[in-house]
Image 1 (spheres, rainbow, N blue to C red):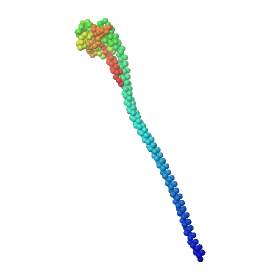
Image 2: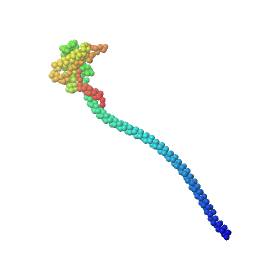
Image 3: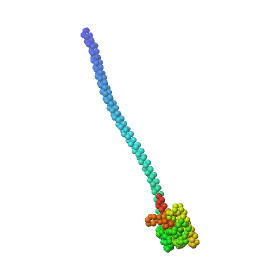
Length: 304
């Protein structure tokens, strides 16, 4: 009986011991699992913290690179802006130069037209002057031949006929002397034979000028008045001379008088005023080629 109870008691005690062993093992396993999980979490957290630091470092590096690129880009934009502004200035300068070139081309074209016109006029004037140059030389030669033996001089370059005032006038007088009248009639005859008997010479004639000259005795105004009266009286005598009516009418078309006072004195070899030869009457002629020469001079002196 007791042995049976004893066996039953052992049967009841055995399951309790096994239960606690199983529970302990379970708890130990859970603790192991918790420890493993905790270790994994710690490791993961540590690795995660390292990864974030690395990412932050990479982001910081990238940000620095971006800032450096932005700085370089800003510098490039500044350089580009300067280059663009410089290019615009160059374009404006080029445009101004083009406009100046167009203006210069227009000016050159205008000057070329003016030059062509002047060349045409110059050729015409040269031809006219050349054709009349021989005329003047022939007129001078014929005047000299007509007045041989008279108390006059004929300038071989200009053809001006010079008559000393002592031949025509007394000192300080404007009345023509008898001997002077004879000389003036010879001059009228020469003009008639040279200018008015030759159609070419008459066509070339522009003016016949009577000039009165004095020496430097007295004031300029006094001598101007005296020289003007003398020139006028000579002109009047020529027009009222015994020349034929045709010659007289032609003389009226060309003859003028001018008093020069003492502005054109004559000098001797020593450089002193020759008072005698300074008192004179000069009878000059001008041809139309002289007017052409003046026109040519003005044309050459006029800038384009």
